Image (cartoon, rainbow, N blue to C red; front, side, top):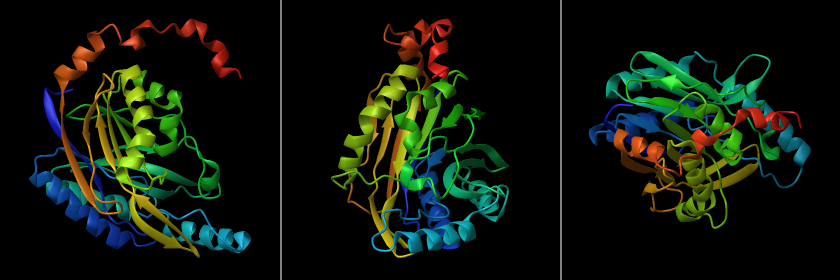
Length: 293
């Protein structure tokens, strides 16, 4: 990791099936982040293709049929037009851009977060643990890899992945330094502060137990598709490798946002030199039973 660099956690109004419009909003957000000195920007889960709401009322069978048809229609291949446009935006702004999309992988769909820079693709991560309401839409991905960038070693856990400690630990075993946590969650109360209270404890623990920085960004705004709708409050957190909150977004629910923070190598080194850095006390030879049940 370099001595220090600025990161941004952002949210824009992304609508399902409005990929071109969503990318226009993402481009504007990236320009604002770059103007404020950011080198890396995290956008929420499925921010490119839009989140398909999954809490229908009425005829569930009809909703599922229509929603699956929409999912197939809006899914994007990797590489493909959406990633090409993200690369163009990265080239224009000089940013590393992490954004989420519904990935068309041929026979299967995945919930995927891509990381692109001015020269193209840097990393991809597929959501590993799929909660029950999302199971009709996409499959679970393989274990995540770490991307070596000019600023730091970067990985990602997508939304529900963060709730299972193994997700971040898989990255820590590869000496990840910055973990991206893109979300699309609407816990009660449906405010940025409510989301931060719901996600914050987990994110702070994931950061502390692995000695990593965490950047989290939650989906924002109202979405409607196939007769169902959902509202996301937004919210963003940047947490340090000691479990401390570095920055938190506390704006209006459902509105676009941009949160910036500085990540310092010295902070990472201090956390990994402390007694509380329990990662160094691991004894993998004792843990075989964990993978057998």
